[in-house]
Image (cartoon, rainbow, N blue to C red; front, side, top):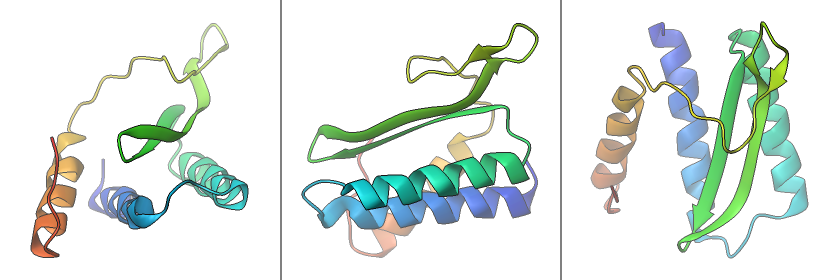
Length: 107
């Protein structure tokens, strides 16, 4: 992943963490998340991505985008298992950012 793509992912994650104060995700916000993820996946040529947002320990939004298997035309689902590769680098950045802002990053 290039640093530019990593920064986009980081920006999206930070945007979603801003929803943590809300009680639930309104349909309009879920629609906007759909648009943002679909656009980012298209621009970065990501074949599949799964997104979940939990608030207060409860999943408020969960959706998969794209194809889990391009050769066999199999759609990604929220149950699709992905290889993480170096995604933990972005996770670590988010944790450090939350800590600097005075929040607590949870494992």
